[in-house]
Length: 348
Image (cartoon, rainbow, N blue to C red; front, side):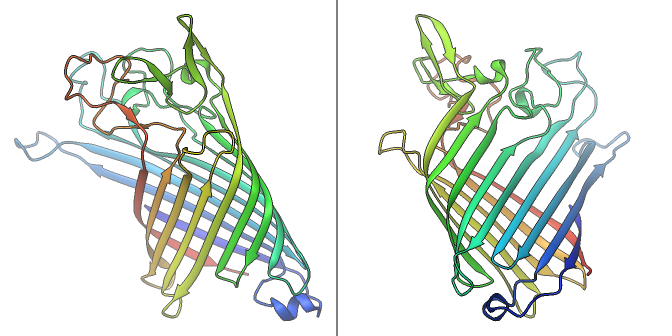
């Protein structure tokens, strides 16, 4: 993946105040950053030799926007991250569905937006009153097997835009140790898991005895008098801690951006595990504007089930006479990694 980034700054003439004296590393006024990435890979075979390979086509892109306003004790920030990629391997028709041509699959689909404001306690303090609102979802619909097409003719996807979506609002106190390290904490944070599609909201997860344990995406789902009862949204309230670290080394040839977030829901029993999210990116400067970057994303959410990479069917549909068959969905740690080249350009 190649990413092009452009940064523009609209600076105002700073006044000589105690804010400039204690934190003159923070540029005043607007700072805007835009990143655009493209991902393309193609292997073409015409009458290939036996065992030499098969056709492959991969397309993808990313779009990032960052807006930051620093005005004395007040700061405001918007962040938008979009990534979408599809791939297709082979030609002809699906082995299990001989009348359907091999469709595209999704290999990445991510939408994240966050906006927030900070207000410094006083000109000499490292503490800020802080509030943040975030949204996480996806762009395109996914069907069984992560296909972009309804191969099994079920009539509905397993995920789409706002099904699911995670919304979170937090208001608390932020501590900026320096230009590199900051910590945010709030004892009260509102979090909602929203599945704005009834057919997706009723996708079940079952145990070995075929009893429904919940929904795939974490919204409330159970059976009462042989009727499926569900709600599209699950509301939570609890504390949030976030630690951000951004720094560069070796004359800015090595850059590290890392973010840890921890969340716990007050509305459940004490033995519920904490939700964790870690994002980390390491960039190595190759040339003047060219970087090699490694992005890692690790998360655990005790409400959301994960799909095994070798399972394509719901565990509520598969027979249980063979105990060696593993569940199609389970709770655990999700991890993703991306290695790409990005082009970064900054101008004033």
